[in-house]
Image (cartoon, rainbow, N blue to C red; front, side, top):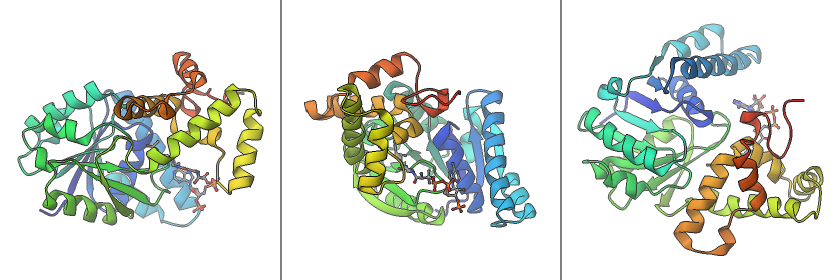
Length: 284
Ligand code: CAA
């Protein structure tokens, strides 16, 4: 099956980027979040992002209009019935994702592929919530989606070869380089990244350095584009805590225990850049 229509469910930080690159790659895109207000916010973000590309003369104003015209918006899951590939990018909550995959399975046409952008949750478990487990796969993008070149394609134990091939080819059409990953908590990138970010948080928690110095040290000492605390704020502290908790539960290894400071900040509603406060204050 050739993918023409891509539906994206959950238009937060990641979903909005997926919608943009799918429309830029020429797919017909259906984007959906839980409210009209959230859709409007996402639409404004995409307009702004494409506007920057016009200013930099990377695309023309008519290219921008053509990309925007490729995107349809809805708040109703039933509208996903004719999509070829549905990419779920809702919040990192296993119960919510399991419920959604069960619903999508009933709505989507029988040959549609159901993909998840989860950072850590078992794709196998989501596949088992459907009557088409062989057509369920992980497509894990990186933030900011329009910039980051990687796509992790994660095979659930049930995923068949045809689904893997289509997901890989679609990822390449979206301009990404694909790595194939076995379904294991946090996959490749987050498995290696999260212990690093968590350790930076412990370094702050134990008073070894200030947030600014920890970030400066890692940026200059490791040549990273962002320091670990700055990156944690950028990704979202709620997401990082959810991923660490999945890893801790899955592997039963204390090296994945979340830094208490991270848990406290999430309890305070300090999720990083998206809420205006995290390891740094973005409101000032
Ligand atoms: N959307 C689209 N384009 C963006 C963008 C966005 N949100 N943010 C930056 N860009 C573009 C800019 O327009 C610019 O493009 P040009 O070079 O064509 O002009 C380019 O990216 C560089 O941006 P800036 O000059 O503004 O800033 P920078 O050089 O500091 O780069 C950055 C910004 C790309 C975000 C860089 O700091 C970086 O790579 N940071 C690390 C990001 C990272 O590690 N992401 C992975 C997180 S882990 C994850 O996502 C997985 C998970 O499940 C948790």
